[in-house]
Image: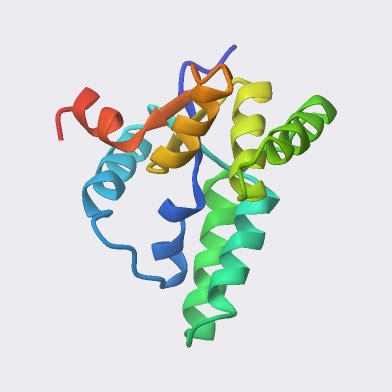
Length: 152
């Protein structure tokens, strides 16, 4: 039987609080994600690139080892992992050459697109870059639109 749950790949921003990193103005979207997850209407995805980015942020700050261990274990337990396709890797490289500096964001975008998983982000610069390049952003959900859709 096929799952009727909406598949959502999170931008790393939404995962940072799980390991103890404060992100401003993120509470509303986290409450909504938790609500949808608890109701079992969404499946949440991450990539190894999210984990890499989390570790990069943690390496620059003071952190609680216990909180990080608990957070990373929670992510691995509650979320599903997604990987880019070979086509996705090549597309990310092509887009990087066209001028977008954040390769991890590009890898998240191409993973969502090639795997047909919604990509939730607040990164308007990424969205505008993709739009200017004529890329298909039909699987990209801008945070504000996500909140409006669910009336939060």
